[in-house]
Length: 211
Image: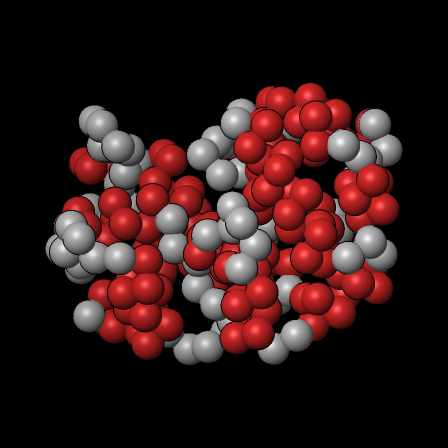
C-alpha cells in the first residue's frame, strides 16, 4: 500500500507539476483562510479575505476588537458567515492579540498545538491540520473530502474509514517531510477538482487511470 501512496504522488506531480500551496501572504492570512474555506471553494475565500484587507481588519488586534456581526458581513462571500465569524473570534481569543502571540502560538510543539486548536469551538481536524501544516509548518498530513473520494475509488480505504485512519495511511507511507505533505495534499485537491468529481468523474482522462 505504501508503494501505491507513493505512486499516486508521482503520477500527480508528473501531470500537474508543483502546486506551491497554501495561498496566503502571512501566517495570519493562512490561519484565517483555513477557517473561511470550511464548506466553500477557495475563490469565495479570496473574496472574503480581500474584504478583510480592504476594511483593515486582517490583523490580530482588529480581528479581536471587531464585533462578530461586523466581521460576518466582511466574510459574507465565504458562506455560513455568521458561524465562521464566531469561529474566527474563538480562534483569535485562543491565539492572542499580537503578531508575537501568533508566533508563540504556532511555535509550540505539534501535539500541544493540535490539542489547543481542537479545543477551539468550531475547529475540527482538517482545519487544525491545515493551520499546522501551512501556517505553523509542522509535519502533519491534511485529509479532506477529495482525499477520501480518491482513496475510496482506488480501493485503498473502506467507505467508513475515518480522518485519522486516512491520515495514518499517508504518514506511515511517506517520509516525514513538510514540503512533501504540502505538495501531496495540494495535488489531491487538484485532481479531485478536475478529474475525480463527486458525480460524473473523468476517469478515462484522469492521471490516476489504471492505478
